[in-house]
Length: 309
Ligand code: RIB
Ligand code: CA
Image (cartoon, rainbow, N blue to C red):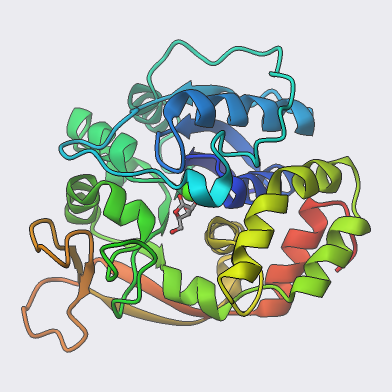
């Protein structure tokens, strides 16, 4: 049985790899689009182009352009000003749906109760709105997998303890983490433990099909950025979260704890605060993914690019 996914995303280079993985291994009910890595117009345009490149009919639902409360800087310096490596690609001929992403999430979960795995690869603004529109939403999705956070404070933004998706909209993350009694959390630190060897990734792209050629073009800037930052390898955060969504058995180590979001700290706004010792007595809400089977992760990525692992 192929998993049934509903993906919230801000494409975004690593989002694109995750979306390729999803279409290679699952049925995708829709792409809910948020502003985040770059503005909503770009993330929507990128999602449409990617779906067209894949040859899929997946509906694309534009959602929230900005965080719930406080504006935040995007990550165009990582992904390119257009979010897809500034390659100047021709727009897809397809148009986005009229329905807002938050409404689409609510509707699809009501139409398909207990079926959908919700995969959150963006700031959580759309999900926060959706769960405010329909407080029963958590009970209607089979599973929520979130790419976000930095569970011991090693973030990737200028609020150094904050990871981008949470740091871009901490209020939305607080709403979602408070509303969902249980979700899987794939944080930035796990992504740094599960990078791809640079040469392996280049060889995988070279050995792939049209999907690999498209991904090679849009990701060139980000791959160079990764190397320049002295990272241990290619970091593909959303791809790791997608691997956990597609293959739950890939998780080799996890810790279930209560995770909250700091919203006011001058230095710590956007930090994910984990009650490791259970001192606060709050019911654990997050299964923190600590480690996955790297071979299975790489096989999913290679397969999504049309290459052998
Ligand atoms: O911190 C990594 C996350 O922020 C990924 O989802 C990436 O696409 C950006 O949105
Ligand atoms: Ca993303």
